Amino acid sequence: MRAMAFEYIDVFYNRQRLHSTLGYRSPVEFMQQWEARQRRDQTVA
Image (cartoon, rainbow, N blue to C red; front, side, top):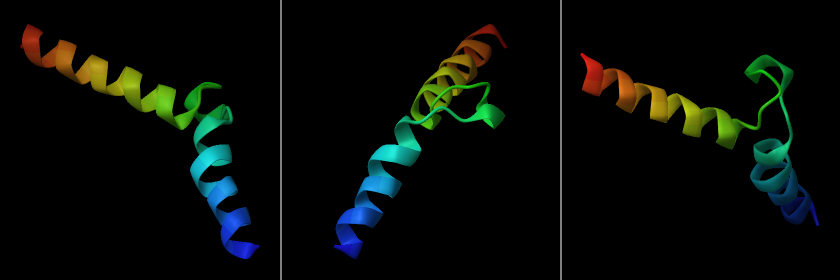
């Protein structure tokens, strides 16, 4: 049961929920936008 709870919290909940420190985006969404900005900045430079 502990492993199932940990998996839910760590794998699903923390990756999907909105974080105020990330501008109310999920960590996955934040990283996707960050990576896109990095690629865009590399092509400009």
